Image (tube, rainbow, N blue to C red; front, side):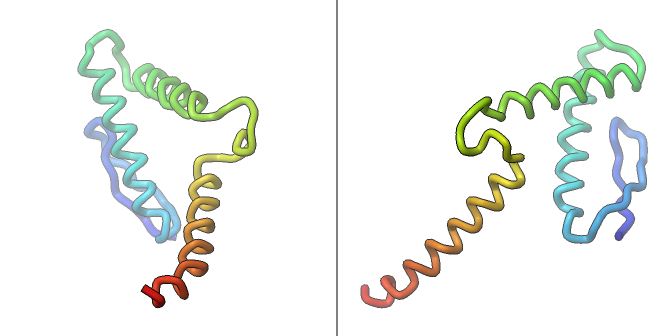
Length: 103
């Protein structure tokens, strides 16, 4: 585990994560900071806790809108979908590698 210093709405936070997850954590922090600052700057909601809850609801709505109620990917998270696509790319790269040498 590593310690990562970040800032959300100007407030510093020290977060722990696995080294290989640092970039994803920083991207999540940047996304959340952008959402929370936009809510704060709109001026309709006061208080960091209310801004955080409003941002969380917005992000949750975005996440839920990406899920489909049925189909082959309905029970998978986006991370699992990305892993599956990466695995498919690896299989295709392996299958096409001998063909590329012919051209």
